[in-house]
Length: 146
Image 1 (cartoon, rainbow, N blue to C red):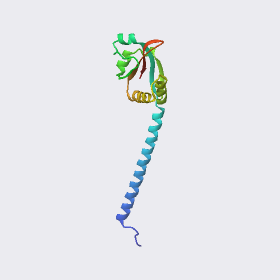
Image 2: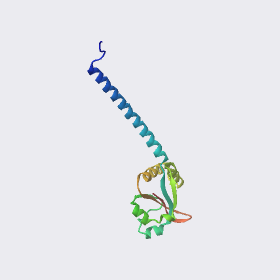
Image 3: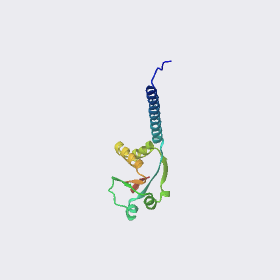
Image 4: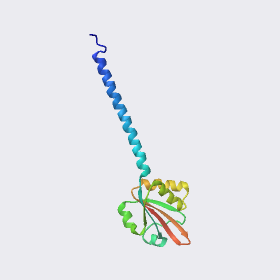
């Protein structure tokens, strides 16, 4: 009986088959992980605290002065954040990225500022945005804390 393929050819075809299966397995895993990454980022939530302190209290507690109408971002450690702010006096929220951005927009930040601040606050472990305004309610630092 005649052999259709030599033993070298059979090994080559087998190796090619295994390599093809391996390649498509990797491609399938990569596509699955991309889908998981997209769904987790869109549904990720962040604990955000919002509130205000009187400007005089802010300065007397050793915080740096901030010109009225300006804001500052400060990245902190968790221990600093917890000691500098009595978080129980702030409103706690569990927000998604879009809800954080909506908050900044509702606080009269521009679209560009709101997008930038949202990206920043999601990227830091702990930190705050301090926004100084004088209005009919008084002279306050409005805080968004993560």
